[in-house]
Image 1: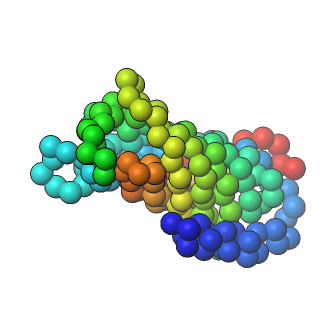
Image 2: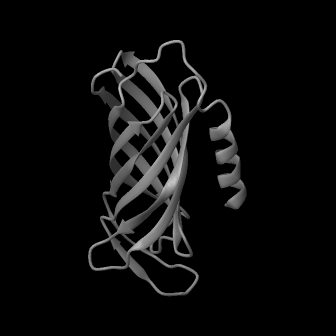
Length: 176
C-alpha cells in the first residue's frame, strides 16, 4: 500500500503546476457517479466477490488547472455481512463513505486521486478508509464532462472494495 501511495505522489508531482496556455478556468466541479463496488470477505455468497450498486456525489475545488482538493461521497445500495481476520461477523447496512481527496491531472484528461475518509453504517462500526484511484474525463461541452472512474477502497484490517463507474461532471463558477 505504501508503494502505491508513493507512486501516486510521484505522478502528482510531475507536471502538476505547469503553466497552461489559457490561465482562466472554472474552479468548482460537481460529479454524480453511478458505479459497481466489488467487495471482498462477504459471507453467505457463492462467489469470492460481491457486486454492489453504488451512487456517488463528489465536489472538487481546483487550486490550479491541474490540481484540486475535494470531497468524495458514496453509498453502497445493499446490506451485507463481512468476516474480517478477527472472525467476528460485521453487518453493513447501506454504508455511506465520505473522504477528503487530492486530485491531480497527470496526462491530458487522466487524473489520479487519493485520500483518507470514513465509512459509516447504521447500527454498526465505522471504519477508517484510504482511497486511491484514477479517472479519465471526456469533455462533452465546455463545462460538462463524462468520466470513467476506477478506485480502490481499503478499510484497514476489515475489508476492501474495488469500484468502477461512470460519472457526469458539471463545472461551475466564473472563469478565473
